[in-house]
Image (cartoon, rainbow, N blue to C red; front, side):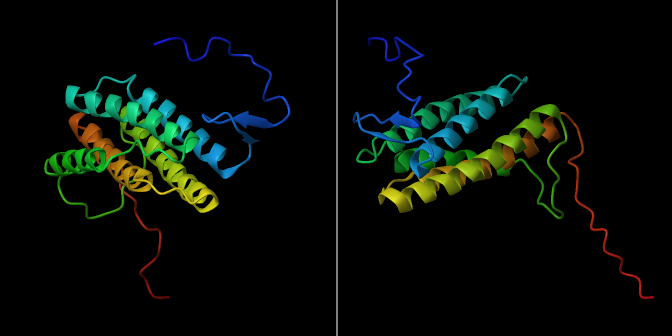
Length: 186
């Protein structure tokens, strides 16, 4: 495979537009470009999680999702092509089921945090939710149909579960939310 980016500073975006895979140019604030940026940010946040010591199964799973993030970016750049498959969603569902089986049921809301790895996983989860909203907006703008929204929805759930697994594997209590509402009567 040849080099896809042989020149990084092309200056072609200096006027506020960017190129798509088909050679067309659109404004950088177009919903599709916003979604691509959010997917890129999500991929970077996954990379941050991967800088932590992780169980091999989780490392492999997150590395695989980084590849799917590039597929999602490609799908947004070429809306006529669908790169995210039902099989990719099924893989996330399988991982969710397997990891959830190791966790106790939730009785309270969990605050983002616990350990640095878990906290970074929660940050990736919130970025994933934003990316999901951006892809929905891009779909509205371009009538794109794909499995991307379902994939992002499952992945954000998986990131939540992974954060729980990481906190528990570090033998750290998950930080729980406590309501400040008074139950006393005056």
